[in-house]
Image 1 (cartoon, rainbow, N blue to C red):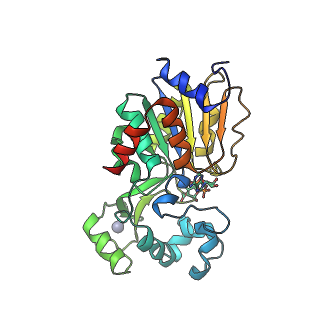
Image 2 (image 1 turned 60 degrees about the vertical axis):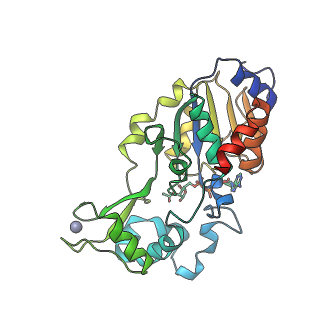
Image 3 (image 1 turned 135 degrees about the horizontal axis):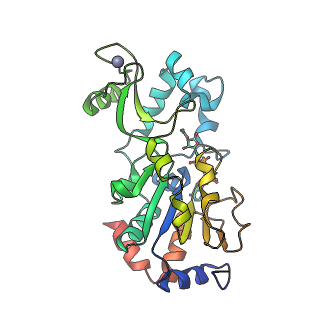
Length: 270
Ligand code: OAD
Ligand code: ZN
């Protein structure tokens, strides 16, 4: 056993003991809901519950590569709403930045495509965007990169961009169902084995292979889950701490217990 108790206080004592320098953070859509971006699976407010207007055969089709080839409109309708640039990082994003500033962040694995962790100042080489992002786009047929200004112009005008060379569909490099995750995910997949603390935030852990990451953490390493619901079997480890609540309030509790709350609020309100 590493923690004296499975509480935030004991976790803070562990962090402040000097024994922690390699925190692995794993995030999902729940860390961005307070920024105004819906998550996917929350029953009333999630994206998948609100896609009726797009006439999809099933909700996840909007991110399915085979469906997109035939019907790119629903994805582009959604892209129009979700395109980065309209949203501000949450205090949870700033908390991850704070861990980086303190030299404690080994890696952030995110499933999110909103780029808010970068915007909060977490450097590129600390982030594994497991499901890709809106940062780049390319032709799904000839794979040629497509310029950012051009996709932005098309998305704003509610048009569907096409490759100037082969006329194939252009798609942001978001990982769709039926597509391989980026190489960076597989290159870093075993990194959690080196962690001395794991923090899981705002994800239902329902999509593989991302959902397998918390299981890579060593038995003796504490894992903290901050999420509205219990997920992924977290809580079963001897040093698992659960905060089943809003991410922003949960990270504030941990920051407070570490004596970092003012610093966190200052970083966030910058
Ligand atoms: P989900 O929508 O599946 O899960 C979000 C989780 O966050 C749920 O457990 C919510 O209860 C919780 N949650 C929501 N708001 C919260 C808040 N403010 N505080 C704390 N918890 C909150 O989203 P992901 O797990 O990210 O893939 O979904 C995984 C993948 O499925 C996504 O990357 C996406 C989707 O299909 C692709 O698009 C390829
Ligand atoms: Zn092409």
